[in-house]
Length: 244
Image (cartoon, rainbow, N blue to C red):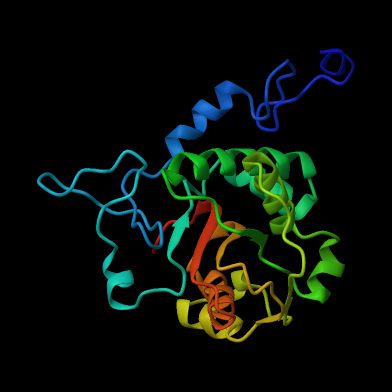
């Protein structure tokens, strides 16, 4: 294409210029090493599987939820977080989030959409795909919402439209990264989300964010959506941090 000759595509990971998608095929294959093997079908926590246990499914999920999800089920139904939070993916996420690199956001969104589609099976797509909102103060400080950018790319890649009539406010809280425990993270975002407007006909939602750590933010937002009558909630993130 003429456009590719005038404005050649550049891989966000290795910098290679050529007529390929971003990331390039070689870098996409290199990311396969970060894909989880067997993971909890509810929270996507990596699970250890020993000989004699249930083998991993074709999409990387086990058949039985982890002990934590069985004892205290989260307010969301499923998490898709295909990769571990490690280089080179972590570097791409940091560029998107802290350097406002929209090319990195586009590459991550396409990658996430591919993995979501591979794990969907016969399940129809949700009625709404929305990024985790930022508080007004943090949005002014950063200048953009990386989760909203990711959600837009994922929607476009999956052929889904934008849902109108949605307004979700987020109260300003200290950054989750500064919380030292799961309990502190949960308390930090408790009641942080307020659903101001929500279409009554939307009953299935996917929440999009960059990284899932303890799931506290996703749980707080999912809980607010449950209160507005949403029946099925998935969380789509690029990566999941290792469990300590």
